Length: 89
Image 1 (cartoon, rainbow, N blue to C red):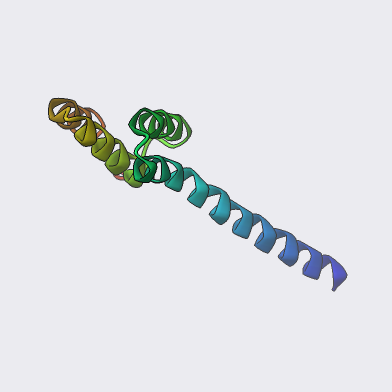
Image 2 (image 1 turned 60 degrees about the horizontal axis):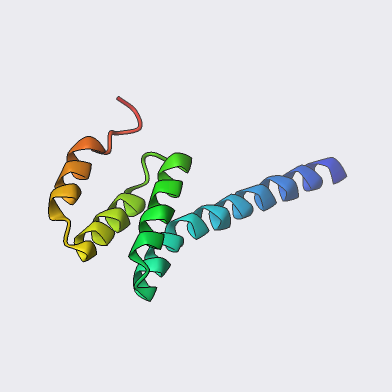
């Protein structure tokens, strides 16, 4: 019984840790944009893409950063290059 409780607690802890770790990656780009740090937002977006290349919120944040720079051609080019594919094809 103690082993079952320990394993259940361990799995729950790992799941909660994963959820919180994932959510901090998404907000760094947005936080930099709120502060007006566009180069920092782009650097955070590139870092997040290295970690997870299918992250929709990072793609949106990167587009917002390039748009804030006035570089709309780069936004369209990135959108065409990084079309988000379904996980199961």
